[in-house]
Length: 71
Image 1 (cartoon, rainbow, N blue to C red):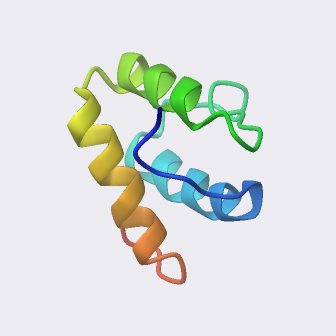
Image 2: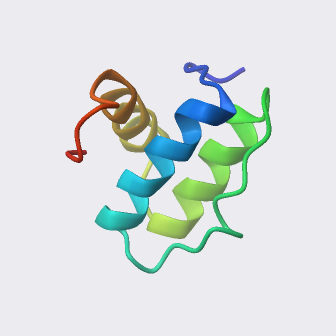
């Protein structure tokens, strides 16, 4: 079970931030549907070559600061 939950609307903003940080990520690679956080975490882990804790921390940080461009 994923340690973090977010909506598709929140993910749309978070995805922009993630793509700014990792400019090689595409919209297709970052597709998300409600309730699929676990799949997304695993996919991002492989795409950015980082561990689970880093990816979850990055998502949480993006979620807290949704209104800013910073990640």
